[in-house]
Length: 147
Ligand SMILES: Nc1ncnc2c1ncn2[C@@H]1O[C@H](COP(=O)(O)OP(=O)(O)O)[C@@H](O)[C@H]1O
Ligand SMILES: [Mg+2]
Image (cartoon, rainbow, N blue to C red):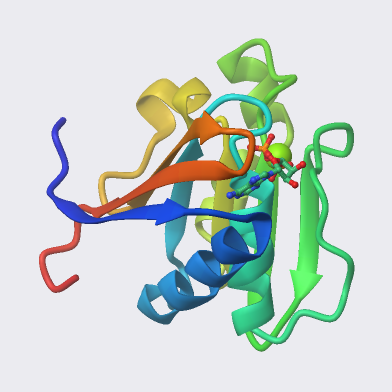
């Protein structure tokens, strides 16, 4: 499905990507789902850091590639999920993915393309691509009309 483009941002540094995440976080509330797409090193985890900063998370935010899920205790619970190593839908369901989606926290999912049919219709999509060593293109879109 083609989602309406909300915004395209060019980030010129890691910190600018963190700030983009921090500003984007204003659109989020309990139950929000954010799907992040982009190659390794595109900046998905930096963007998540910014979202966490907006919700006053004090824990260290880093890629949950090996742990699959990091839970942060911000002003709203945040579930940071990285599906990079997941090989099948069974594996994804095995980590209790659908329960995270139904929780009253915010879910941020790296490698969300692996979700296939599990992708909720109402969500935000964050697409990140590398322009050069220090620049990234970030495209934000939403299925919610009021955003
Ligand atoms: N403009 C930028 N935005 C985000 N990261 C950048 C940028 N420029 C360079 N980088 C570097 O790219 C890497 C992004 O890593 P990370 O956020 O973990 O990516 P991902 O989670 O998509 O694999 C970091 O090493 C970061 O310092
Ligand atoms: Mg990452």
